[in-house]
Length: 204
Image (cartoon, rainbow, N blue to C red; front, side, top):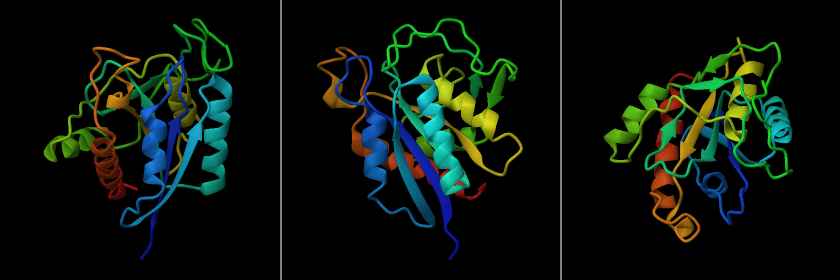
């Protein structure tokens, strides 16, 4: 049986937080087999240029058919596949290397935006069918999440690799650091991520 090679990435904690649900998610996925999938999981630094370099180097090395990058979005109550990446770095906080970019293009001569090549509408529909809150997002922000999403889509233009970005809510363990923000249990995110990956297999 031919396995579909799937690369997933998460991020280390940032902004003074102790945890990042995307790191917890991909580390768990690395140890939970998914039928039909050869999965590689990596954790990226929350640094604009370095994160993109690490991710793109892993794409080159692993040669996946599907790339799904995950990140944290406090304030969101659902798993939200992102539709579009924009050519802009503009941060309200510094990255983990102290770089706080403002109104700066990611690629000087790049397109204003790139669409995800993941089946994002199908992903949302499949999650909602199994009772996991999901909705389509039209903004990945302008911090490191959007930066790697844009860099990924820019580099993979025209290649037969389906790629994109998905934002995750906080996990309940973060409630003390993020009071009054919605959360989702990690086990539910894991179930959702497996469904997201399965949704991509038929188009990979």
